Image (cartoon, rainbow, N blue to C red; front, side, top):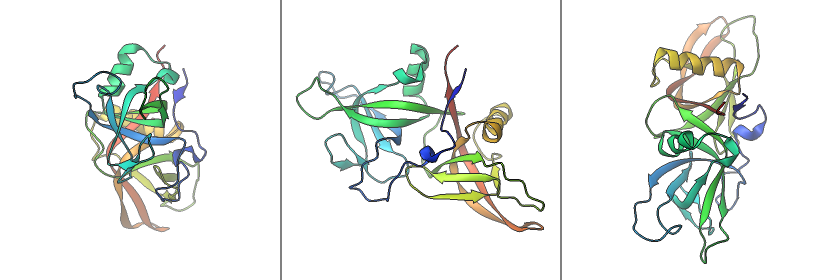
Length: 223
């Protein structure tokens, strides 16, 4: 079954000039908290979500906040089972989609309608910068070779890098091996981490290395 992931087009970095007045139809989000307030649904009992790599998130009423309330996280388009849906909502997951207004309430409340989901190799949460990385197929005569395209999520910032280092990432060797195969041959992976410079990495000079803290892989449809 096909992976649900980002294709090689610009989807990895939804268009944004960085200004708060610009609305992105689809955005990368994470859940920051489950709503435990006591009132009638859908006004309570949902989730608080925030845009990845952004200080503030645009809510359904047009205001900005550190996180926004959504009544539900709609995973219908993923085609996964109910148990897997619950696991994704409660787990270390990055969602790609949009906050859509509900039409069954008398004040602005939205649902997060998800197009794609990316699951962390282990439990945890995003605390720093998140990138999409994929192999660009470039082959060089001399190392290091800028064979990976790296896109800062929820921005237009892209660059080519030479290496993705998963050694410091959370997860088992088997999980990291799966992530590396996805990085090399699939739709890429999401990496939380930072870039460093490895001086004199080869005849071609210095190398830019993305050192991973966490890795997220595309969610697979249930068989």
